[in-house]
Length: 339
Image (cartoon, rainbow, N blue to C red; front, side, top):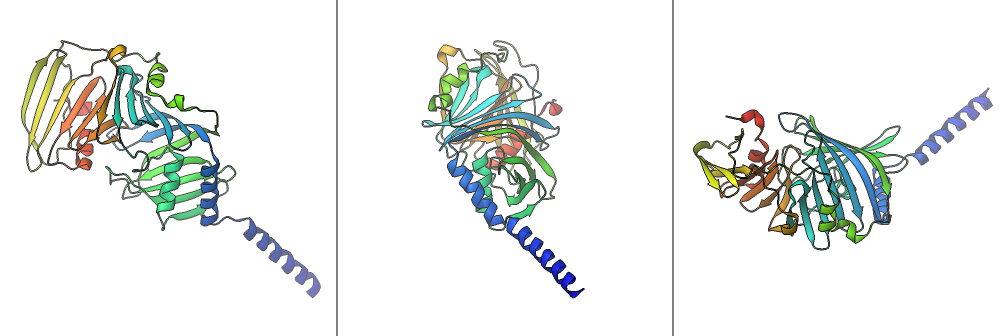
């Protein structure tokens, strides 16, 4: 009897040792992720992103191409706006935000994506894990999960994220970004993640990517016509609308709103104009691309933020507002606030 009990004890102990040997610690998984990142010549993936940061849920289809070391192509297509796709490019010349439907692009001398969290980029997720010494780690049947702090430069309302990696491939599966109350306001689900060493530098060329979008119907130009819808920000940082003026330009109507208070700002709206393909050139910005809370990418330069949405180009300018406050005001503008 004692011999049989001893054999059972040895068997249980052996199984426990084997289980321990098969488990992965946080440090083990991070090393595997780092190794995979260093060995990948490039990758392609698709993702669906849901955003609940505004009044209504916004869904985006995202296509990501990455070529080692620092070439990126990210196409964001708003499912609610077939004409509203934008492309973020990073190549040897800089960072670009393209709006193919308008034949328009901005060029930035920017550290993007290294200077801020990006929930749909593998390297950014890994960097956030490495930067957070207090990152939590859990293992489930199919996933390794990290809970880390985020690094959104212009949005401090989303401080935490959970990052899910497949246990077999160590590839990202899902990212959830949370507010202070741990309510998930952004969710990214990855699909078709595949390593790819076939991409060339010309795949990240501005002109080539503009030409790759011929099927996108241009936003209709309303040249010479009045704007049919004037939108107002819900968030004003305590300022009130002090003046509103409509000015006729050669391209149509321009509406200028002046807000006065402890922090003054000016908001300009006008119909987005489609640039002729022959005249297309990148507008240089001494700043960074920023993502508004509805997913739209804008150009932030010191005290000025410009973006295009729903056929309208907006410019927000202020010497009193912080960059984060400008993004908050811009994100609060929606058709629900028509007056």
